[in-house]
Amino acid sequence: MIEQRYYLKAKQVFTEHGIKNNYYVLVDKGVIKDISIEARVNIPVLDLGDNQLMPGFIDMHIHGREGCDVMDGKLSSLTTIARSLAKHGVVGFLATTVTAKWLDSIQAFTTIGEAANTCLGGAKVLGAYNEGLFFTDEHKGAHNEKFFLRLTKERVDAIYVATQGTLKVVAMAPEFEDSKEMISYLASLGVKVMLGHTNANFQQTVDALDAGACGGVHIFNGMSGIHHRDPGCAGAVLMDPNALAEVIADGVHLHPSIMQMVYKLKGPEKIVLISDCINAGGFDDGTYRLGELDVYVKDGVARTASGSLAGSTLTLETAIENLVELAHVPLLEAVHMASLVPATFLGLGDKLGSIAVSKQASFAILNDKHQVQATIIDGKVVFEEEGFHSLATLR
Image 1: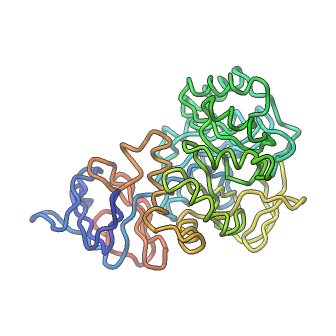
Image 2: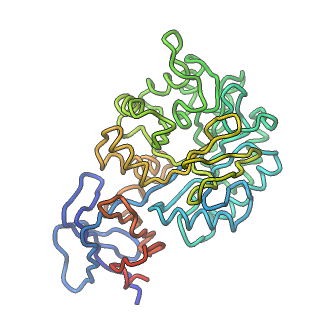
Image 3: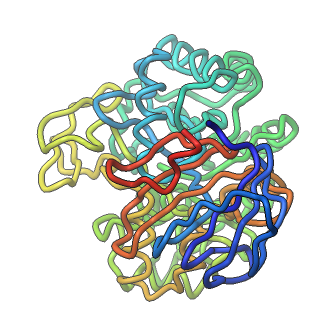
């Protein structure tokens, strides 16, 4: 029997304002109704034992998993990605594109729009993240420069329509003359602009942020770095108190000392943990495809033939663990960088991102080894590790 009203009790409950020991979280019809030290009588209690109850994670920047890519342009691929992400505590994600032929991109965006209004049986598709097309050659990374385009209102409109209005983020290089106009236009549509795969200098980046751009795509990677006579795009993002910094905390994209520096400069509310995972995620080393390029994965690290990093095979629970162990970030802050920060950035902070009364009952349940045991979305179990029986009545 599926319970609609029940308590979850955990050794540690990661609430918005602190970690509570041996607390009860009341779920009623998919919504959090109470967080307390005691349970009311006559309401079922599901005891999670020594496990941790965390807010469900939100992967704001992910390309694929388990052999499937957003650029496949197929609902079946997004379904595989959504269900794979649920195994890792993710309750929602932005389906992220890469540079490809224009018509292939439009097909991918069309499928994202369809998926955003469809139950895929796993993490929810919260919208589209355009990481592609509107970049420059110097820091192209794993993007095929043959398909780079100028960002125009007509192209923005085409993408926005294809996604059925679910376009949430557009990444762009801001060094073009009409960048400020395009940033303003995207903002008028409610679309966030992130700066990346760009050779913009410090002043060009500052001007773009002043015009309404929101932050930097996977900070330090795919952008001009810090030089003592030009702090570059990375320096501008780090020094702007309002700019969001995407961090790939896999220990490869950023040295631990750089992660510490980013944390000290940005603080816990302006860092969002992303996986930037590609279709190799969850699979063995080998040769894969990202957009129009071959990608070679060795020891879990993805690179192009030229040696450029090409996304990752990271998961968010591992990113949290890495940030804590390598950058010495407090655990609750690291958890919120994968939940509350992206939810707030995307305008979903009233519904998702933290364990708080009136928010959706969407949780990640982890053991003390940082392994996801179960994932709950809107009060319903979407993933449960084999042998984990605490949620039997919710199946």
